[in-house]
Length: 261
Image 1: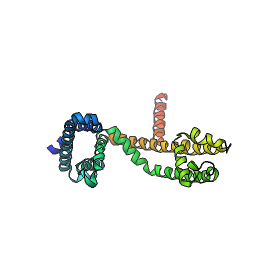
Image 2: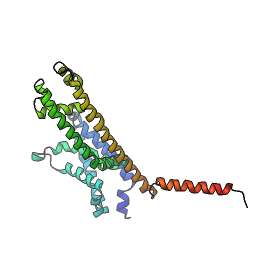
Image 3: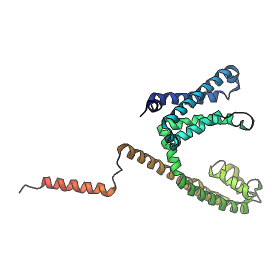
Image 4: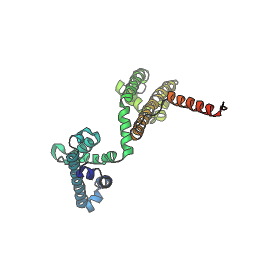
């Protein structure tokens, strides 16, 4: 390992960069306050530029030290993109870049292992979550068509069109005002409408969202198990292997208890 590689991977360097990311997150928040900017604006801008310069130097050193391996590490590429956005001119067509500077705060993810594990688990859960999203969309569509036909004439502001019904039902998925704003006003003209909405909430909010949680938890468990295997260097024992070991131990104990001939 070269001296440059040891420098960029040294724990002190990691802690310094982590501290600068936290300080930068605080300064970016302070820059949103007009009163603070009126008093300390130039100092905050100068501090922000100085921290950005340190980030650029740190990334350049990592790029030189790791060369092609730098681009094979997704977290390094993420750091490069986030810092690179801050280097674009924040004027003209790139004025939106000024707001995107806060993305540098996401560098905390690359610096804190526990956050990396959580993000890795979420990325690993995306294939399973896509099927659940499709299921939720199907449920929303079916119930939206039914709601438009059943309640569109009496509550056109919420169920007058298919689009409005989809928006209203998506609001109900979050349980936001489902009773006071939607169900209770409909009870005056549709006394049994509560059956429709309770069934929808049971299917969408409780069942489908619990499936989301299950997929994420399973992905996080797999990520944690993969990390454990990486540290220990051996996979977990299967149930058959454990039972075989137990039988072997029992046979050895029985042999010890047996009287000598």
